[in-house]
Image 1 (tube, rainbow, N blue to C red):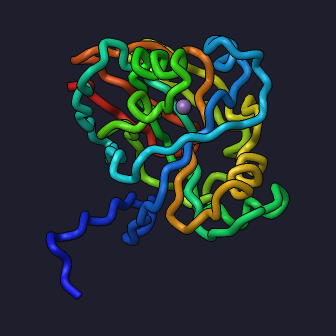
Image 2 (cartoon, rainbow, N blue to C red):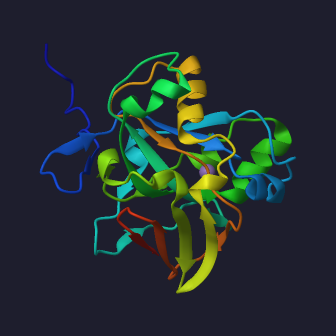
Length: 231
Ligand code: MN
């Protein structure tokens, strides 16, 4: 068997303290998973979790100590930042119970669920899929993975993003409506999770627009900080 053209190169993430790369399978995202963000999006603040996906090749690696350039995407005039804790699945499974979820987690990273908010809002109004608002090229800037064993206090870690040195979002992972284990339970009831899957766990309040020339610095206590220039 020969391919008609070269298959796409696998997407992978570096791992802190290891020369091995983490190959990315799928990118799942949780919507409205912090009460104050759900409210700013017009929700009640506490609803069952819902999910959407980004393609694996939407990953834009933000290497430690470097500023990665994210091209301002087409079709939008309202590009929003959403800082998120990203969970990396190391062991797959379906119908994983929350109590068993930790043994399926390889590690964590800092990610930005970049969003063409104007297009997402148009799609919402029309009851159409969010893909054009959420799943565009370079829409998932993400830092290197830190193995879970190195961040035992991740469930109570501070999360933040600054734009041009000013705080835009600052909260704590303990404010997740559905914590990481509960999210894995619900997600794995709908899809069979695979090693290599990433889960963007949702964003706290304070989402807002960025423009060309803005620099974002995003972090979660204990993980590698990321730095992204909107180009
Ligand atoms: Mn999000």
